[in-house]
Length: 388
Ligand SMILES: Nc1nc2c(ncn2[C@@H]2O[C@H](COP(=O)(O)OP(=O)(O)OP(=O)(O)O)[C@@H](O)[C@H]2O)c(=O)[nH]1
Ligand SMILES: [Mg+2]
Image (cartoon, rainbow, N blue to C red; front, side, top):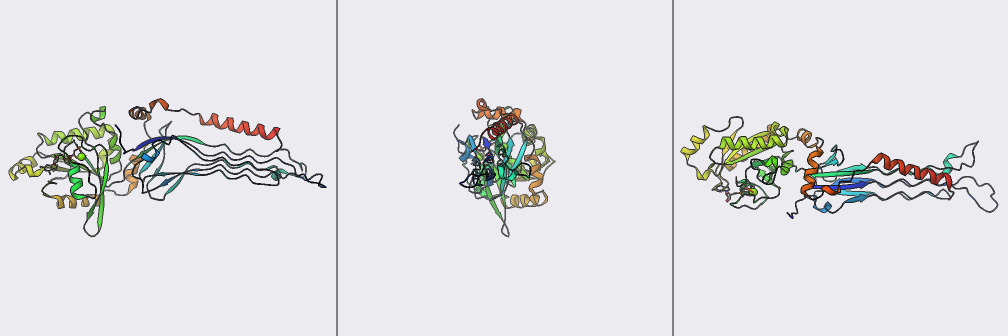
């Protein structure tokens, strides 16, 4: 399926290697033994990540398979310093989590606009031979090689930064609610899977307060085995402080549906159940008071509930109050939610996900150590053999 909502990319990143120091002897007319004058190598370019609030997805990185910083220039005669390699900045939306693609290890998390994180350090430039002159060796015939570059294949995942995440089956009325109370306007329709990609909207509350709500595609029983759209969009509720479960009032068995949803969440990640939850019984305009009373008697008891109708506006202000209250008590501090988002990635899942994206074939296994050794060797030999 073609979509502009890209929340997952894999990129090979490489910093620049340091330029080598020069091994050069000063030579000029009438200066028979000018001494060493080899300059230092420039440093290799760094690779940085930069939070940028103008991006909402990772779409702009979709076709960036490789991002390489520039190499440092070599030092040369007359003490001349090599140029520094060009740095590269990778702009990402706030909420991007980076993993090592080979091991699944959590690398870092970019949460704020303008935040800059060095992902890979460029190699330092080598020192030229002028640094190595001593009283016993006034004409050193060696210089330092530059430090090697670093290479890392990363997986970047966008995990939205919202306060409230919506959890429900398709057609539960999630998008209708988001339309009614927030700045976002996802499409609404009377068929399942209208929403194919997550979106976030800001809900304004009294006294200039506001909170952020995330509409995500519906999940169905068996989603953890890949039914429907699967569970991959659940990554977007990993950092929400509060989960709002939504089940329509005309559902046969609300309690059972709630169990099914909980079960799918548990399969995806049991830690999601540590979050605060609220249950909204939607489409209450289809129910009369008597029915509401009857249904109320048989609702799950482990969470607060509220009957709402996004169409008539019934209980919508009360829902906002409830969300606000619960958010106040929930740990809105990212640190708690981050514990989940920062877990290392299980890369057995990764291959499956990439297969979905048609990328499984180009998993590149790099042996970094080997690569570095080779670089070093090459440089050393060059230094020993040549004179600039
Ligand atoms: N009567 C009534 N119908 C509603 C209400 N809220 C939503 N609906 C209808 O329910 C259907 C599904 O609404 P959506 O908001 O698209 O549902 P969704 O949960 O976003 O569904 P997916 O995106 O497919 O997961 C639409 O036909 C809505 O008009 C409500 O409060 N009352
Ligand atoms: Mg929807």
